[in-house]
Amino acid sequence: MRKILISLGVFVAILACSFDSSEIPSLEVGQDFTDSNVRVLSIDTFTVEVSTIRFDSIITSGTNRILVGQYVDSFFGRVRSANFSELSPLIYDLPSDAELDSVGLVLGYDTYFYNDTTRVSELNIHLLSDDLRIDDDIFYNTSEIPFDPLPLVSLQYLPEPIDEDSLFIKLPFEFGEPIFSGIRDDEINNVEDLRETFQGITVQPGTDDDTSIIGFSSNPERSYLRFFYRIPEEFDDEEETLDFVVQDNFEEPKIFNSIQNEVSGLVLDTLTDLEINLPSPLSNNRSFIQAGTGYAARIQFPTIKQLFDIPGQGTILSATLRLKPPPTTYNDNVPIRDSLTINLVDQNNRITEQLLFGGQPVFGVINEQQEEFDELIYEIPIGVYVDRELNETNLVDDAFIVYSPEFGQSVDRVILEGENSEDFRATLVLTYAIYDEDE
Image (tube, rainbow, N blue to C red):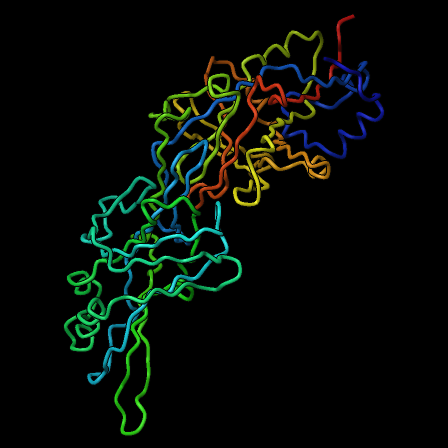
């Protein structure tokens, strides 16, 4: 469908106010242009191919979020996150007469949650049986560190990520005493000494949970392993604490989240390799995004060069991709975020670069006017990308992907309508100006 939208005078005014000619290499504004008859067309008939891919692994080390929990999702199956952390004190110094009273783990909520928090969840604290160190000092959502299968403690709790500041988990005295006395007796003086007795912990969700995934802060002021001790005095004992925290070390991360899901028997179970694309017509005309587990929507425009079939010289004024999440796929428990990140990928789905405009990242954002009518539609300004595709001389099977901004430390999901959806198909709306048209 083609429509004449604006007159030449209005077009020139918009061009002067809204576009940087350096960002639109196919247009040179000059005498030849202004002397031409100009038509401005709005075209929304280009094919938009939408598919789903899954990354083999994504980096989750060095995160500022402890992500723990499990729930069952109708699209993504059993989604599970466990945290692995090495904890150590800032100083290895205790009075020689200090006496341990108790020990506990404090997990400070960071307000993040996903799925139903009205159900009782389970947390299991296990001791690591190996150091939190690997050869390349990077951990992924698929990484695991061996741990004692018998939990140090199990806790049934009702998550309150908004109303409460933190969760306190009391740990056995027998666990804390060897560590505490080792520091007090000058047998543990540094992290290497500590690792001989204590490598760290993993916080695992209940194996049968179908509840929620909760975010706790890894900030040392919010989450810590605390030893409560006293120093005997003649009248009243002096009460003190010693905290073990995640040390901020980007060169050798001391924390990561293991985030995985089980999709056996579901439509996504064919995505066993990064190079596999699952076209939306083969997945109920839907495309799937989920942070943490590595799913992203892949977009291509196979017919975009048909724009050259339009007679005359022309230039792209704007190109907007419109994507809609079906209303039945989100609610207060599984919300969708107001923005999406865009990256370019090659034919093997390896990320090549982030899509930029004017040196700034391009994001997909929800159209606020549509939101007022209870219709959420993501709009992505991709004029730069389309222009690159039109000027690509080689036949390259590249594309761009759309995914959640907090891809490595959340389980946010977005379901999108595909290219052949009856309710709302993915659409590229292109505004194209033609000048010097052959008569």
